[in-house]
Length: 125
Image (cartoon, rainbow, N blue to C red; front, side, top):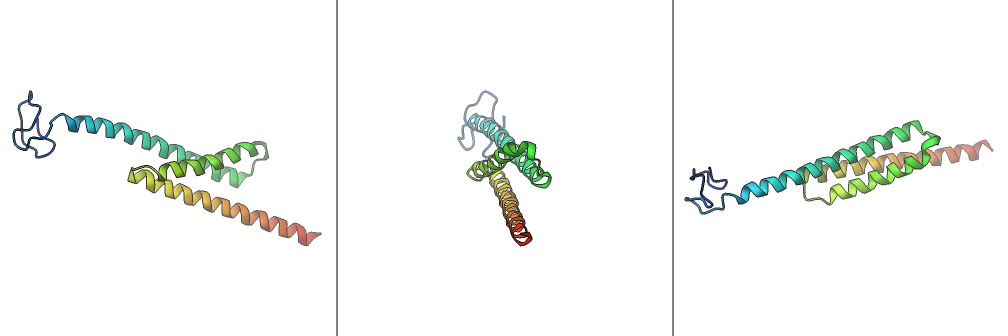
């Protein structure tokens, strides 16, 4: 068994490195814990991107039949981006900021389109 800290080869039955004294089994536990955390982050990122893509689709198609679902997707996108931004994982933070920027962009376009439609209706009367 090789030490995770210094790389020295140790007998398989050793609990501590004969060279640097590091716990040979603690890094294995840390790697398992880190792996499960990374899987959670990956799932959160996928959900965030899925919600973001659906928000764009709802915005472009404007389906009246799913207006309530559209609002839920918008809120879900915003909440997921905030969750990702507040994680300790750098990749998750980056994806969270990108998703939040997409959300803000879509919301701003929606507001501008709403103002333009209202303005055009006022001019037509």
